[in-house]
Image (cartoon, rainbow, N blue to C red):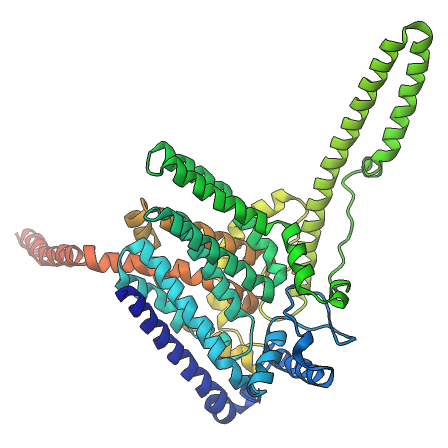
Length: 531
């Protein structure tokens, strides 16, 4: 009960801080101190918040003009939304929610402040709980979560109408769910809460950035396999009973069933109106790539099967004239089944290869689109053609994800006033981030036996690698990686806490003894020289 009250007080404190900063930015800083950055109504120029607000107003007016809100629905897809008979390409999520919010309150960005501040404070509490499970020290957990709250970048999504506040909160729900899946104090409760936390994270991503859901699914699938291995290990060590292990695996299987594409289609059918469900989404077309000269032959198993069956029938008729009917039917069925299985397996392998190539092609096209969007762009000339290309790019992606923007990039002048302001804020962030990251080796050495440390590092690092591979624009990457990045920065900060609490006193004493010995040694050497 005391911890619950403490969490609520922390949540309320961060909520009030975020809401106050948002009001000051929208009503004082932008209109009066930085009018050249002000787009009106407290919105920052050159940002997506202007687009989301305009679409939200449009949807609200359309709803009032055509039969009220009985036909309102929440979109979980990037497909074009059909609003009462008219097709409109809407950047879903904030626009749909904003339309309902404006109809219930006031049609200004001020109405968003309570929601955005609540998302930010919820993310902070989840961060505290994640670090507390690792450190077993609440004060350390709060201190290591402060960069997430205090870094200037976070003000983007609790002062402006952006998707980032939702997706950041989704990441912390996903990570907290993973932490609960490795806790073993109350297995049933922890697995149920862990499943619920992961589902909430998936749904938030689904609502705001459905194109990112594939990345989350890839990571979740890999971790589910690792979790199953972990539960088998705990069972062998007799840490978990067979019932507890089976219960944990059952919840993992249920998560897999929820994440498969068929479940997504079912939910879309339930939540889409018929016109929108039948709409064709506007997306970047994928260019088909042939693997080799024989691709055409491989892609047409029907022809191969028919030619094989023809030769089979010929050999069957020949053998009929020289053998009994029983042997003929047996050889026919055997050869037919062999040809069918061969063509099926060939077709299956070809489909897998085609799917991989299509995905890699989509990654290149997405990167090219980001490259042409302007701003600070990294490695825009690099393209991927095979899975090995993606694997070889992992060290570079990790370097960019952890250390970019590099100092020489931050000091350059931005393409617009908003970009210049963001770069100044990044100078402060990256200075402290570089400093905190130095503590990671000490933190790993101290907490290396805690499974929570490896869950946090694996999940955050993998997400950073995926984001760095896809998003070449530094501003976009920094916003997308923010939650994962501050988790790693928090672990680095814990290394400094360990140093000052456990090693600082000994370090100072050793330094003093060294400094005291230096003059004595100098005096001895000087005396010898005089002699």
